[in-house]
Image (cartoon, rainbow, N blue to C red; front, top):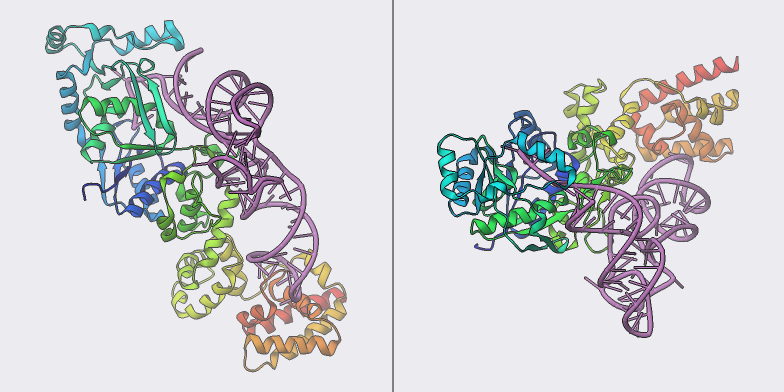
Length: 481
RNA sequence: GCCCCGUUCGUCUAGUGGCCUAGGACAUAGCCCUCUCAAGGCUAAAACACGGGUUCGAUUCCCGUACGGGGUACCA
């Protein structure tokens, strides 16, 4: 398998896994799965100051939630320190890099004078090799810079096509700090060579790093991988997505009742499409259909309304058995259900979820709608609904009393039997079913909107139905008096 | 400042010179279905940033301009 595709996702552990990173990870994962390749996870923790173990774990958790399993890793970039140093040593030995004895303070001073025009003036590039070695051995501190050659550096980007930089626009960048630790561009290239990465898929904020990295590959005598630069994800205001736009960490969406399948589906469509009008896709379908050449160049706005719609689509497609483990914990933690009831009332819960799953866009909404079926009494009556459907208290009470009698006699207790009883009640009263169903609905759930009335009555069970009607009758008689 | 990238309905997008009276999806509005609400179905409104070329013909190719974004660190 010499031509097996190897990709990597290489986040720096300086924060949670955010949606932009998640999409980058997803595209890498999809390409690997699509082609039978290898997906490597690498944690870029060379910046010790800003990296933390908790954040590394948070990123791993986010990936796991999304189901983006990795085949190798997580490898820590910091573990490659010796190799990085060795690579720098070789570049130094072959003259592709040189020691720079300018101190950060000196550089800053020059930058202050020249403002934005400043670019490193290569003064240390002219130091003869023997002198450079002598000063280093004498203990003078130095950083190592890459000697950018003349010419152009170009590549055929999988997303952007031909992309070209003039080397003169690239300064002799530092590859090794004074403290002997590598800089990002060197570490990335050294690691990607070491991991035999064939396709580098990352955000297009890295486009300007790419020529530097290609130069490094060439200097190190390694094959240059394919590059694919994905467009940025923006907030609704068109600015780069950030915390002030609200939820950006994938974990926050998990808490908001978003399904990982929906998140992946939505993220996949942010900058890519399957080429037809199909939008709702399972993970398997995404894997089947993904290809890099249908990735867009244009940055995209993250639209939570569409995410929620898509989540609703995925919830509706999720069998009740699979929905139960997602919703039950919410019901248990809000005290509506005892932990052991999840098992003992499993059939009833599945029956409920089967009905509710097309009625909510998040698992939180589903759980909220399940509430009235789990408590004994109606918790709150919607006044606007009462005003509309309980207009005449006497008449409503009469009708509810008739309904009560009919429901008390339904045998067996099935949705069909209930439906027949309600229709018969309406008919003998000489009104349409709506005139019976709406007042009853308010008596049962406190508002004018709910699933079908026969479902509500059946699911609530005879005892609670009769009790709630009795409560409604008390209320109506109080109002009439 | 300099370097680079981008620009189709409010948003995500289809479109690779004639198939475009620019298609789909979300959101919005209306209708249908109907015991209500969802879901579903149908319909409506809604876009090729601008200016030059090239061409018999440009959303599509080229050049400018404008606007947006990224980079320009001993951050990643």
